[in-house]
Length: 432
Image (cartoon, rainbow, N blue to C red; front, side, top):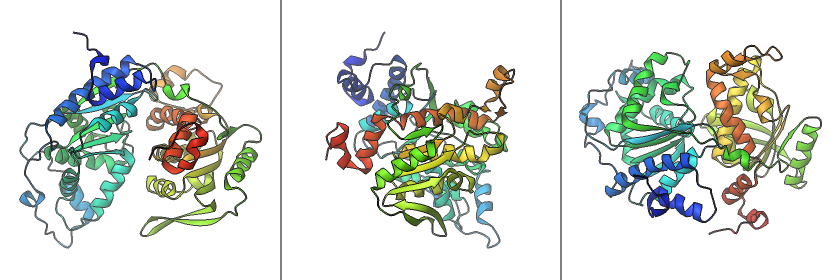
């Protein structure tokens, strides 16, 4: 029997129906299919007024907190990974893992699900990078626990019943080695996972170090979540592309960026600023004024920075200008990966980003191919290419985000979060 979207009143599908009726978004059959999956999950979670129930097991029931003084913190972590299936299994609600191309609405439908959940359900939405940074910090805070991964998982499950992770993308070996143990414990404690990704589960951490140790997580993920591909043919981010004076490339790009930056700071003197990253580490920004910073690409990506640095940068500044982004080649592979991480953090935090670059967003990544793309395009002798599975897959997301960051809609979301006084000039009233 065909399901009628317009007859649904509650849940994520109800919010979607209202958005279509109000002209905020247009009906998309691929998004609707994904929303039906989330509507079913919404109903199951909502029927349990307090969210998924926990097993009743606590870490101290099964784990001794005393350790040999010669045992290192990392050994405790690695030892804990050897025991992922000893706890008793019990039935639980299956989550949803959504994957598909860039700009197809994965994040939007997940956010509709989250917005629809009743208040008693303990739900949290975060970016995968941020989630894993928090997990590693928690692990460091438990140096004398025999099974720190299980202990951290138990703490998280006490705080969150439904975890929504955006942009599930595993590239770090430290993340890959603990994910199976971490999520096995989270699922055993009753957590429901909703995730979005550009990659199918079987493609996660493809080509990564010691991937054979990661494969059990993929199997668990497919058992614990309903996997659904969003096959929309429309990239909605491209539909709202609007240059708007934030992305400059070609001759005179650096000068145009500097002029735009000077307009934004309004003649206020720029000074060096030190941004705290961790208790023991800081990030130096050579030119900043208030909440606006100016960095060269070399300062941002040639240094050994990581997601934690970029998060700290976006916590401190709401507008960031980056000068002289190059077209990436095999020689700049590591800087390309850092740039992708930076754009993810900027986008998640709705930072206003200004760039000058050697080429347009697609040209920046024209030399990077996935293995499958290389098989098709290897006969192209006009350009030098290199193969990298991780960057090759994530570049489409980055290109799409660089396009969206130029849009009026993105500027509205920036203003709503960071500069509400701008809303009246952007055509939207501020809502208290």
